[in-house]
Length: 308
Image (tube, rainbow, N blue to C red; front, side, top):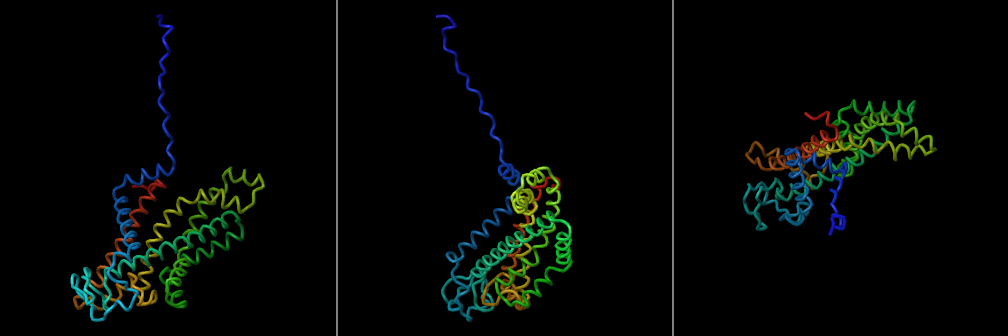
């Protein structure tokens, strides 16, 4: 048999490398930083504990029938009148601090998430409209933004909450009013750059509506800095809610937010009852720090020029 009669051997060609998606590149870059991964792990644990609070806590701090004033100011590890061990102690009205912290985390995370989403939505809309419309519309909108940013955030929130009254919805509204200007200023700057690019001119020449050009073509290219601001402002909103509740103008005493728990224990600090304020303060600190650690890495990944 000649060589020509032999069947040709099929040589398997190597498969072309799969192109990485932007999400895949972002994930790899994010998980390269151990500090950011640590922040993500801590934040994930905090969220899991907050979601599972009704199932893993011995007491519902919202239910006044389960709170006994005789159990007030128990030190960590003591047994309450209901028979369970208060591993973190109790506060001044007899609420289990472990239960109060987990339920308080639910309020803090909800306030931070909702206020961040609403403020980002309003701020992005204002920034995009100002950049695209230009002229007097831009001037009026940006002067409002400048006025908003010139005033202290705590002062505005205090005035609004004092005028509207206590409650979660009132705090969320106040935080949205405080935060939306940050998004508007950032998005307007990015939208001005995108507005002068060729793809926007092509979309306008095709006769697309202004709303479609703004929200379908320009807005997706302005999302990167918004993601960074959301992480920073979420931590700021959580801290501001705790500050308002600590000052007595946030949530009522019947709702165990972290700020309320810290405020309840402040008057007992000098008498040695340190745990009433210390443990809620540690939970608040871990929540804010973990969000900031993730936000710093997200900022570096989305804008490598800012990475140290």
